[in-house]
Length: 357
Figure (cartoon, rainbow, N blue to C red):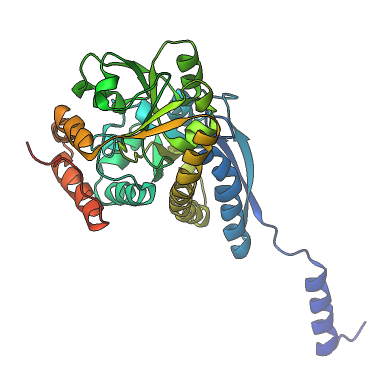
C-alpha cells in the first residue's frame, strides 16, 4: 500500500487544478434589427459603438460574451416594421423609429410637438431620456408592445426644408407639397395651402426627384448621406428643432431570460450610445451643410421674424400632445413642463411658449 504524504497530496491537487480549463464565458445571442440601411448614422454607430462597447464591458467582467446577428436594410423588417418586429420576436433588440407610431407611442412625440425650441441633439436626447426615467408613460407604452425601453436617441441636429425650387421665405412654401415622416407634418398647418405628404427617409430622394413633393423635411446629415442636393438643391434654414426619433428597445421575453449582468451592461451602453450619436450628429451638422453646398446646394436662412410668425401660426400641438396623454391617464401636462424646463436649464427657450393655452 502506497504511503501518500501531505506534501504529495497537495502537489497532486495543484497539478489537477492547473490542468482544468478556466471557466468558459457563457455566450448570449442577440438578433439586432432595423429597416434602415447600415449607412444611416444610428445604424452605423450601433455597429461601430454600441456593440463593441457592450463586448468590451462584458469582457472586463469575464462572465458573459455576446454573439451578435445584425439585420439591417429590410433584411427582416422595413423601417416602419421594427416596433412590430421586436414585439413578435423577429429581433431581440431593435432601433425603433418612433415617429412612425404616434398612436402606439404618443409620449415619444414630446420633442416633435415642441418645434422651434432647441436645435441641439445632445440637449434634446438627454432631456427626453430623463423624462422617460422620471415619468412612466414611455416605459408603459413600450411594455404594451412587449418591449423593454433602454434609451431614446436623437440623430438629427434640426429639421430643415429641402426644396426642388428656390425658396427664400416661409411664404414661398405656400401651396407646396412637403414630405415629412410623422408629427412634423403638423408644422405645415400654419402655412397657407401647404400639403403634407407622409414618407420615410429612404423614400425622400425619389419623392423629390419624381415631383411627388416640392420639399422634404429632413436634416443636413441625412441630406448628405442620401444625396438630397441632387434633387432638392435649395435648403430653407428654419431650425425647426432637434427631435427624438430613435429608441433602442428589447423584446420583453428575451429580456426576461437575460442574466442580470448583461442587462446592466445593455442599459449602461444604451445611455452612452444616446450621447455618442447625438454628439456625432452635432459634430457633423456644420460639415454636412458645407457638403450640401459643395454638392451644388444653396442655403437661405429664415429670419427670426419669419420663424416666430410660423410658430405662432401653428396650432398648439404641444398642448394637444399633453391633453392626449392626460386622457390616457398619464401626466402629459407635467411631462411637457418638465421637458421644456430641462431645455431652458440647458440654455434653450423657444420662440413660442408651448405651455400656454
